[in-house]
Length: 412
Image (cartoon, rainbow, N blue to C red; front, side):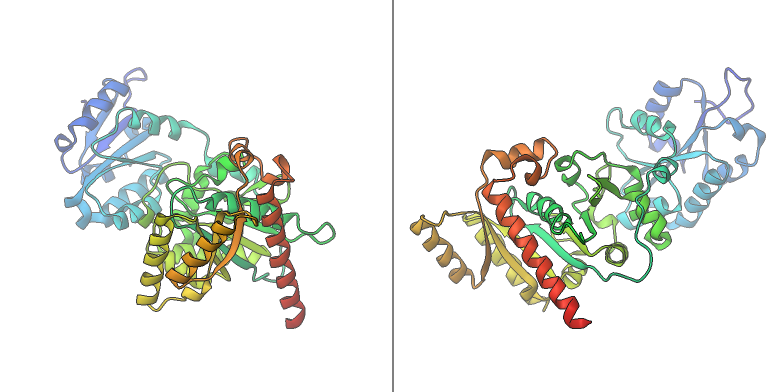
């Protein structure tokens, strides 16, 4: 470890750790030495602010701001360090141990480029440094920003899909419903936006073979500053018909995003699109109520098994206990029994009666082609157009579009 003092070109300091006491982060010291050798220094919080104005700081490529729970009382100072580093065009990687999501959120909004938890996972710091060396993702996104319709607010309809157990087909439903809505009319095709809010394990990008972009996390981390241009930069276009907001490129805590953040994203999407489809995580989070309240239709995906039945009952009790609009839920049974399966039909009826719910939508088992369509990055309409599941989702899309058109005409 070297001090932050002048060096010649071959030994100039390329990075600095900034912490209350770097000895509390011994793994960080080891990684910095392994990556940079002697070409890094260590600074205290107050020293860092003074050092940024020195000529020696001009060679810095990045700083590693290392904090723990004891530093949360000095978030304003941490924020000032990040702000000044960004003004000097120095990248910032945030190293945090035992820090609350709210504090992380605040510092990331200040402009930290990367976040790595402590103790450092093997190779994670090196990967963060490599990502920071890449061209500015915002600049890259600007060249491919999705053009958004201008003019009057559309007040688009919001359809939400949430699986009540693993593997019940919620993402398949969300992706294919969004695609079918975008293709529902040849003459006056509606504008459709698909949003993946499963921030940790979202797979909409995989289902449509789209890359995940860091601009998504940047937008979600600072929705206060989000406008139409920022929102459009985070979107991607699929087949020139469907606009998609994928989940972030890195796994982030579900509670890092606030209900206010989600409300702003939903409002922005509804302003520019006729239909907005949201794929939710299976977990209930702080902003689940926000999405439920905003939804026009909330599809709860289940299967004909005990785990779905138990989770449906739990969800029903939770929503009713909080006096939330349980009536917005439309239970959709995936892999439903065939028309000729009378025993299966009877089981579906008993399931609905025992849970006190109405199973409004029964989706047939699409079989192997459904799984293959996701692996190949194609909607069912493009990979298995005659698949029974695809036909049922297409029928649902037409029904929803007709209902929306009729409502619009009545309003006019």
